[in-house]
Length: 92
Image: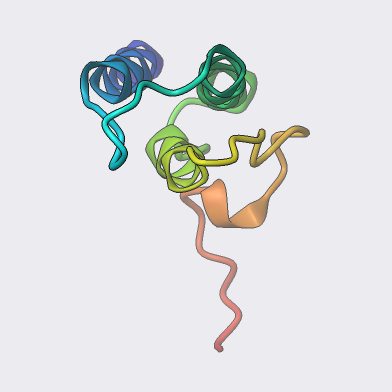
């Protein structure tokens, strides 16, 4: 259930991106749109790969959106620690 919610949230975030115009009033180029879609899709795959509730797909998607001007997959191996919902116990 949680996985389906995350996947739906990622889908709606992508649809919102397409619906809004960029600062220059231009739609993202086809390559940038594909790359951003790939990033969001990878986040959804990471959510499915790990146990339910362990991987934070929304945080991953937010990072995809931060790099929408030059899209790239932010967690290609589904192992970036900042996208997990687990505290490490290490004080910073």
